[in-house]
Length: 244
Image (cartoon, rainbow, N blue to C red; front, top):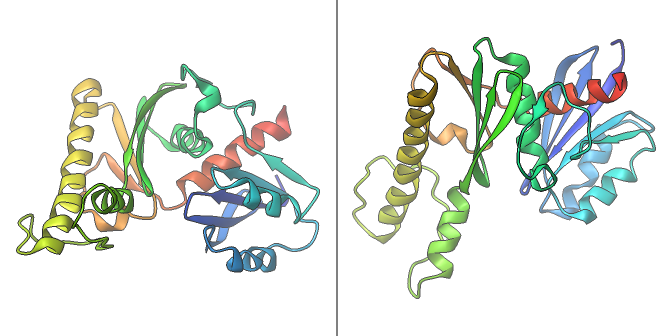
């Protein structure tokens, strides 16, 4: 397909803007969605009357802003045509970022089964078996866990540490960081072991998300990191829209 397409992956905290030139992803930029004063940066990245594709779990105000950028816009939603079968029991409630991750790993995988692990505001696992999206899991990410510790206790402070060397904290702040960071590390690796137990060697993991850099998943043959996984899934669904 010989054209330029701007793809937006709008999450709870930031939006990624990627340009696909003739099907190749280039020039990815990240802009906060929570800071309205920064939205003008998105407008500067996208030429007037460009073709846009939007996958968003952000606010309606942000989505309205994106719609003001062009009339040539494709929105990924529960009714979008897909290259896989969506076997999720409540597809209308499925986050479009999860669906886009599933489509991306279906395109990239060289095993029968694959799992997308998106480590951001939430920790999301999504399983593709063959040509079907099955489902997965959602749990709180780093910042949500810190926020909960602060909001639902009387004395614990609100912290934002994203690294902690020891799993044994020596004061309140490092104890909180140890519980959140090392607890999440154990949770993610434990979930991965469950998938390996269920699917054996015929399985590949794809890691993505803004906080994936804070975890060490070693150099195993069944694990691949792709910071732009969701953008690639959005583009694949866009191609289905064009062909539909």
